[in-house]
Image 1: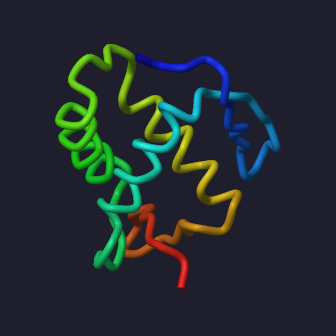
Image 2: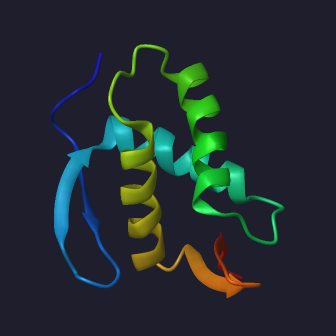
Length: 99
């Protein structure tokens, strides 16, 4: 089911560390993260992960790897690409879509 040919390079916004994952994994996770954040003023990592877990289990029922790990890795990459931003409100670290 998963093709091994197309890779997406993920980059950490602060360390610059880069690694490749299959686009078959990247695309549904990116879509799920953006779906979670759409219309939100900001969500914690836990709130995003809870949403993504539900979406991925529904879209990719055979997915057996760590959904939180992929969620944080792809969220960091979206931050690097300027799609989402991190901000602090009332001592909580939140993520939102960049305006």
